[in-house]
View 1: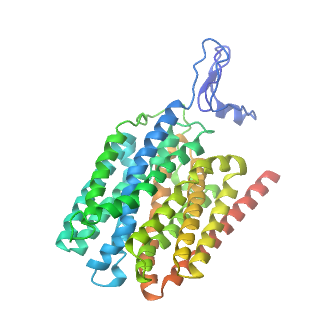
View 2 (view 1 turned 30 degrees about the vertical axis):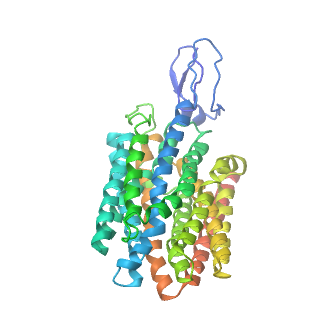
View 3 (view 1 turned 90 degrees about the vertical axis):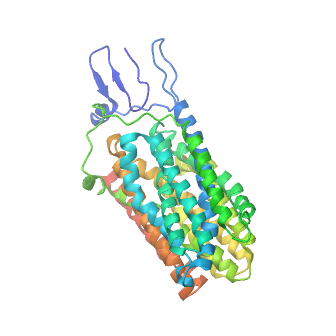
Length: 441
């Protein structure tokens, strides 16, 4: 008799036949299998999360180096835009083209990785980051705004691939470890938050008097280091597995209420965060603060985005995804209140810290919720749809951010958070009501 080794493996009972655990659940049985199983007989293969843990750590390092470049983008791209753009309303366009590049690359990135595997896909993404950064350096020297925007567009392709790091960490993880694996990857953002602004401050005068060209030269170097780290990923290429359930049509998958709410919460959390963060450096400089001061505020913001990942996974397991996401939405609304009550350094810093924590709860929670809504054979297309929706929203938010800031002011940027928070809270309440009705039947 062979015993159960992991939640997604088969079992045979006295050699009669192979059964899927899903078959037993269909017959009304439920078998609880811990994430780290122990041998109950001498011939049992022990399946644990050691590979998943290693992959999560490698991906966290890759996230750190990608994140340092992303922080550079959000701190300096708008400021470069103010120097090169034909009008102030276009100053945040390079940030927008960065996010548009991400949105357009999310689906091709997922399909590409399905063919070549996670490792080669992530290496390709980092190469986009390198090429885009080099183009940005040349564009700053040439004072070519549109070429600079094209360079940030290419770097958006890097972000599209890097956005799958969290899903890749979940690929080899058990059900119990999956939320923590996602959180571990997000912890890579802590290193990015600590060192990213330092790199911005240290490198912006590399090519003095041409400001900010050094920042993008540093991003090119960070992309090369990320490529070296990605080589250590150990995720097998996806194979067709006859033991998996057959994939459902995408239309059927997307009709799941839980998936609808999960995607919406991820979209709104990331969109709100980007809306405010994109305008913050420009707004602070306009209010008399220095570039260095805005860099430190972005650093605190980035730390608050990723430090909660130490415990977000545990909070999800303890209190449930819906509650954690709802708290994240409330924190995002508090960030808006902080921005509306003043334009002091404390207001900017407090608002951005609350914005980061709220984003973490909303985005990590939404990601974990998405992973509950698809079968293994469906993951690529569902992940692609999710990230396309998220980054299309982020692109819209970054475009709107510059327009709102230029036309109405900093208060309008913060006020825009409240309708999105309200929409997500209503969606979570609807999901909870739906679940209770289904349970009572």
